[in-house]
Structures are given as structure tokens and as C-alpha cells.
Image (cartoon, rainbow, N blue to C red; front, side, top):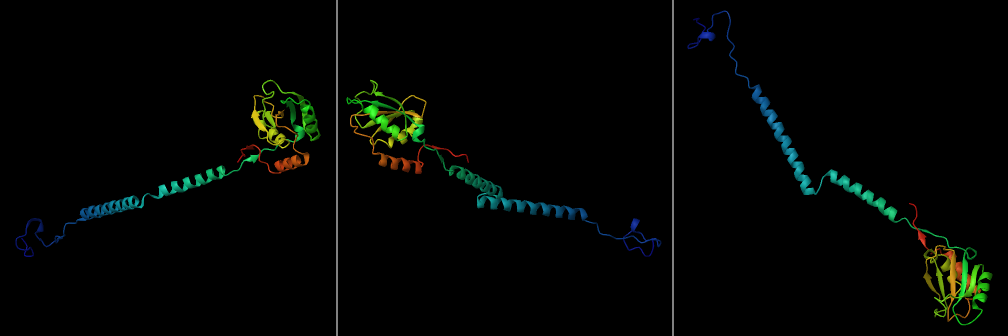
Length: 216
């Protein structure tokens, strides 16, 4: 053993004079890497947990906010469609309406004289005769206007300007341009023409007949 060999050391640590042993501490790189990885995982889990808590206490995340915004926009579009106004349907003119005049009273000649006056006012005249048994002497008011369901807000409304106090009924006919005027027991005469013309003008100037949905 060389004199340079420390006491108690031999074997591979024996100094022979040709080379010196290197006394190194064991390296802990593996432990360091594992420690760094564990710390990174812990930080990631802590961050994820924080986000979950924020989401819970805030009542929803960004995804829900986006969905809410999208839903609000959809409702706005729907509301716009619902607010789309109906387009008024034009009333027929007197010369587009055919009127059948029936007399349901015991007084003779009323059907003819009434039909003649309506013709002067621009209406087309169909039949002029006594009322059928269903209505003969059974109309108590000034008159009864009878026509198809579609004529209620069309031809019957226009004809109604010529005689105040009339009743309006529907039947099974399909021609909305042909209507009946059945003269009742309280009939005296048609509404004066000047007054009827004003009512007809006002009716045409304020289109309030049946309205059809607009194409929005």
C-alpha cells in the first residue's frame, strides 16, 4: 500500500501513484425530475379545481353564456316575426256585388223598388221577389243580410252601409260575391244615398275587413 493511501482505505481506493480515485457524491437527478413532475401535476389539479369552483359559484360557464346569447337572439327573431302585421284585404266595390232582394213583409212591391234603388247606387241585381217560406214574415228588424262566410267582412259589409239595423247571417253558399237582402217588418226605406255614400267611403278609406297574414 502506498504511503499516499489514507489509513483504513484499500481496494479500489488504494493509491498506487499512477492514478487518483475521484470521490463523487451520488447524483439525485431522477429524484429531482420526479419532484418537478409531481409539482407540475399538483399545480394543474389545483388550477382545474379553482375553475370548477368559479363555475359553480358563478352559476354557469362561458358555454352557457354563449347559449343564452344565442337563445336571446333567436327569441328576438321570433318576436320580429310575431310583430309582422297582417295585410288588410281590399273590400269589393258595389259593381262587384250581386244582390238578390227578397220581400219578407205583407207589403207588396218592396223587392222591386229596393232593388231599383240599389242598382242606381252601383250594385248588380239578381233576383227580386218574395222571400222563401223560411224567412217570409219571419224577419222582425229592418232587414237580413245573408251570404257565404267569406262575405261577412266583404260584400255583406259593403251592402250593410245601404241599410242600417240589419242582421247578418251565413249560409252554405260558396260564392262570396252574391248576397241576399231580405226586407224585414220594420223596413221603411234604404239609408239616404248621401249618408250611405259617406259610410261607404269611410269603409273604403279605413280598410278594416278581414285581414290576411303577411308573408314575413
